[in-house]
Length: 121
Image (cartoon, rainbow, N blue to C red; front, side, top):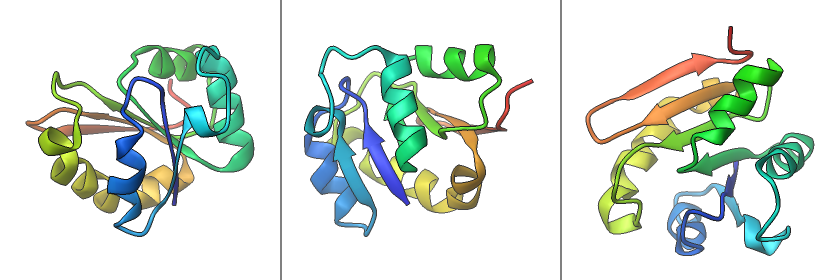
C-alpha cells in the first residue's frame, strides 16, 4: 500500500510508517505545499496512493464528487504526532488494508474507527 501524507501531518510520519513496510510520501516531496485539496486527491488517485489527513475537506470532496478514489484516512484526534497516534494508525492500516485498496473513507479517533466504502452515498 502507498500512503500520501497531507501537509497537516508532520513529514516525520514518512519514516514512522515506512518502517512498517508501506511506501510513504509527504505531499511536500511531490507537490506544492499550498496546493488545493482537490489537487492532492487527484494526484493520489492517479498514482495509487491512500491519503492520510487531519482535514475534513477530503471526506467532503469524496461525498460531493461521488468519487471511487482515492481512499482517505481522516484522523479526528487532537494529538497527531507519532508519539500520540503511531500504534492506533498502524492497527487501522493493517486491519483495513483491503478496504483501502478497494476504495474507502476511514475516520479514526482514539476510541474507534469508522469505515465507509466508496463511492459515498
